[in-house]
Length: 441
Image 1: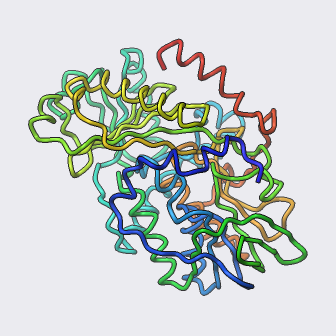
Image 2 (image 1 turned 120 degrees about the vertical axis):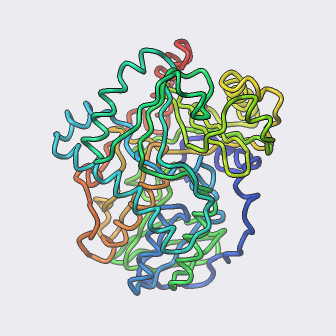
C-alpha cells in the first residue's frame, strides 16, 4: 500500500483512547474467505461504504463490504458526532468563482438534504444514537467575528431556507454558554450523535437487508478485466461493480486513480469524565448544543447527555506516539483556556483520526474515471457524518446504473484534481498551519 502518513497513523495507537468504542457492544464481522462472487464490492465500512451497502441491499443487490479492521474503525467511529451542514471547506466566494452561483446554491441545498437524510435514516432504521442538539451553534471568539454575523445569518436564510438565531454576548451566560465568546449564531439544521452507534447501526441494518460485511479483510490488490478482481489475505473476490469508500485512510494505489487526489489530515478529540451539576454550573456551560468556533484551527465541542464534555481540534501534521502525546497536551491546554473552571476535570479519553481534503476543497461522489463500473466518495473536510452517508446513497444508485433519485449537485459530481508533491503533499499544509499557530489559530 502507498499511504501518506507513517504506519503509526494506520495502527491502533491513535484510536486506543477513543471514547466511542466503550459505548457499544462489538459484533463479530467475519473475515472474507475463499472465492467470492457478488454484484457490488464495497471497500470500507464507514458512513459512505455502509450507507451504500444498505441501499444496494435494500434494492436487491448482492453486496459485500470489505473492511481492513472493523466497522467504524476509521474516521466514522472517531469523529465528534456532528451531523450537520458541511462537506466542503471552500468559501462561498471560492465556490462561486470556480463553479458559478447556480452550482453554489445547488450545493448548499444538498447540504441541507444530507443532514435531513442522515437524521431520517436514523429514525427509519430505529438506531439509538444518543441524539441531542437543535442544529449547530457558531461562537465568535473575537469582536471582529461578531461583525460578520448579520450578513452570515442572511446568507444562511437565503441558502438553506431556515432562520438562524443570533445570540448576543450579554445573553450567552443565560443560554448556558458562558465562556470566552462574544456572540453566537445557531443554525437549526442538524443533530449531535454518537457516531459509533450510528455506524454500527448502519452495519446491522445493511446485514438485515442482505449485505455481508467482512472485518479484518483489507483489500490488497484490485484488477479489472471487464469485472473487478479484489484480493484480501484470505479471499479472492469477483464483482461487477466496485465502490471505494476509504476516504482519509485510502491508499494511493488502490486504485491508482486515487494518487494525490485526497490529502489526509488529523483531527483530535478529548472527552472528560462525567461531571456533576455543580461542576457544570461552576463553568456556566450547560447547553447541549453542538458548537464550534471560527478559528482556522477549528474547535468543536458539546456537552453530551451523560454530562461528559467532548472537545475537538484540528491540527497535527505528524504521526507517532510522541506527537500524539504532544497533541493531547495541546488540545488539553486549549480546553482549559476555554473552560477554566474545568481545569481539574480529568480527560478520560483522547484520540485522533484522519479526515480528507481535496485540492478544490469540495467533496466528490461519482465514477472513478479510468475504471468503468467503479465509484468512490471522499473528502468531506471533517463533516462526513451527514455528507458521507448521503454520498453512499448516491453511489448505490450509480452502481446500479440509475440516475440518483436524490439531489446530486454539480459540485459533488466534479472529480478532484491532484495535490502537488505526490506522497509529500502533507507539506502543503505546513505554511498555513504555521501561520495559524503564530496568529493564535
